[in-house]
Image 1 (tube, rainbow over the protein chains, first blue to last red):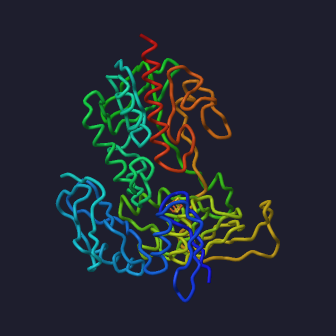
Image 2 (cartoon, helix red, strand yellow):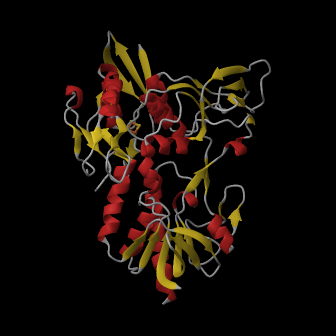
Length: 119
Length: 325
Ligand code: SF4
């Protein structure tokens, strides 16, 4: 079986062809670089995505603080991560890279701020 | 009248890169102006990842990419930053009339870099028939409402046009619990990057209709539905293919127009079709000493290229100032 997919790792967006035999990957082509190969493998076994959103700030100069997971999380966990994100309220100043939620949904990824929001 | 060596209008990625580069090429006495209360420009609302792969060799969100340049700017004392500052006019001697809260001043720089970015095409430019109810947003405005203001502008959304911001917003609306009922693209393929079709549309099984055109927007107070039909590859309507989609929100993502009204006011020659300065050299205009960089010079696909070319603008301004001496 041949599966086609677009690599999302960079703006080139290579069209990758994965040849599967008995659910095992036997060949990957179409990727320009090694990242495409890693991506294809992960898409077959456990697709991962970085989740980005914004969380509500209270008593800070910005209304919303942009956030992301510091590692990709399982694609089928995205909406669970989102419903958690919607409950988060930030009341103290944060800086880009600060952890907002540790080990979100036991995924191993932290939710971090992506913008400085000083007092 | 305030005199300056170099004024840069626009504190987004283009303006910040130009300022840093001008400083690194020996210019002191630089003034960087932005009308918003923060540096960073449009990057502040582009909270998704995908920025910086070329320039920083890692994938960053918009605010993270901007943040790195904002830090750099703050560390350079020769770059003065003026926020909440709006340029009202510009004349051919490079004199700017500038509005700040409670203040109206004239500033005369020896060299000027315009990094004013772009704006979105409007419904009027797309010639969409129908009523004018609430619920019609440009993709960038919807992005600002959700990501900066924390407001979800609708529950049942149709995205019209498949530019990158439209695709990104299809995902954003979906993540926030809204239903994106369709993306309508008049051409045979997306205007956006293939990766955005994959990670914003296919990941969430959002229906995307290529070779389809929006005919009409319906609704009295709020958008109620839109009608759509099929077109051939020459964009001619195929008869008897019309159907309707119920929705409360229409998001337009039909392309960007460089913003160059100020230099046009000063007499710079502008290509009316693209709204960019007429030139055959990067960042240059028909008036010596007025440079344009970033999305106001031409529409770029990725911010890394904006940064790269805007660094050149800073160097060009430095060279120009060097020759004046
Ligand atoms: S394979 Fe490499 S070059 Fe191609 S899209 Fe993926 S990361 Fe980019």
